[in-house]
Image 1 (cartoon, rainbow, N blue to C red):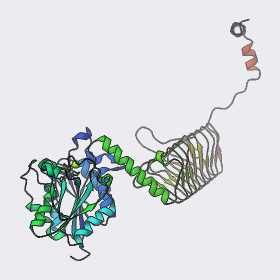
Image 2: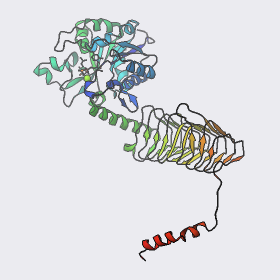
Image 3: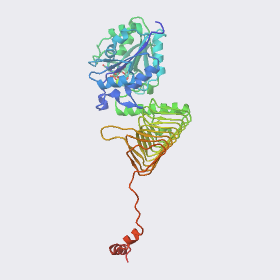
Image 4: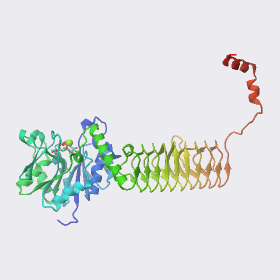
Length: 457
Ligand code: UD1
Ligand code: MG
């Protein structure tokens, strides 16, 4: 089949996931900031699968929505009744009928599969002359897995644990679940699968023996057990998270990122970090974060949906929420929260501040304790702070409001009106000074008596 014919990935995500004990469907639980089903999708895309179908359970608009957000091009099919893995793949028959070089079946709850592995499976049927390629691994404890049965080194069948004889159960080479079928034979094999087995289910693994009956070859692509790890409960969810975090940290460090205590840094699959960035201990990168070259993320900072420009400095103890956009050399210091706000080049927000729905010009200085009052309980409003503006400490900027370029705001001000460029706005009570007031206060007879009692005189 010509090279330009697509490779189709079908992701099975119709499982109920009862062991998660959750109101959320299993495939929507996240690892590394992405739902489980998203990991299968991303690996398939990275492997070069250029068509994508996802099979979901009945009445799962939440899963369909998550899939659409991750891969808008994916075709979504519903499996109304859970009748086995082959039955699930057949729900995507219209996508298979459109033609493909290879059909790769992935599980929505197996997030550690590498793109290289998917590519190896697809290549082995698209170019290697096999009709079926199966993911295999040596299980420390094979109980529950399908066993890969070989004769003279060739894969001849897969036997589900429940259907296996005692002798077959001794086999430790197990089915990782993923499988590639050659495009021209995929539908024929899937449609030939029956349900005459211990679980009355249509088993995808039966494609192996069916292919052999047609004089075709099947093969095994072996991976370490860890890569085939699936998520059935929250203990396995945490185990997958740990494996992924280690992989991601190592990738970033190899790409030139310094992590002082990598085991305390949490990354998302889509985190982008430039060279010579230093990440101090206990930093969390939620989804959608980009950090450019030479920036420093100090300890105990939490970032999500944020962009940190070259040489910028964040934290310690800073929170960057979605839409935080820091230009080159901007500084966000301790106990500062930034949401949907753009900070110009060299702007400084050094301590104890909330900036939401704001723009801050280059080299502006935002004093400690500044708050943008951006929300009236119904609507959000913008604050614009010009370049080189100076906001005195403990000011409240009541949006919508504009502070012009180079303007000053006196500390403790509650600013409700626009401030023109280079002006000074002071919006606070006038200071009253009463000379010797304290001396007279202390000299009141009742205060003198109390002071004497306290000192024991
Ligand atoms: C499957 C394999 C087994 C393999 C194991 C690896 C079959 C019959 N068995 O068993 O050989 O060792 O994976 O983990 O394939 N699904 C649907 N619809 C269905 C049934 C399943 O979408 O009707 C999805 C599930 O959501 C899951 C995947 O297919 O993502 C695998 O199903 P699961 O029930 O976990 O199969 P296992 O019994 O683990
Ligand atoms: Mg399973």
